[in-house]
Image (cartoon, rainbow, N blue to C red):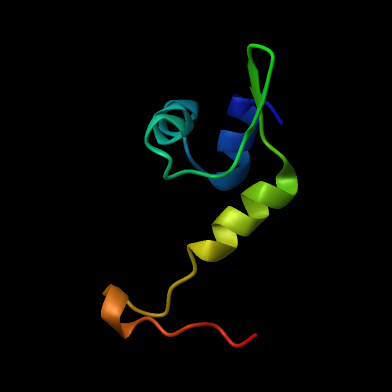
Length: 65
């Protein structure tokens, strides 16, 4: 997916995705030539990593595997 499609998929803006590529906090992406692409499985993995059980980090429990 291109940036705008990926942003829509995860409920963020394209600008947000652009910023997270700079600081490394967003989903994995592919850099092919001058273009950026996102794989759906990487977006899904990133979304799953954001699941929480509490507001504060110390109260979050690891999901059962």
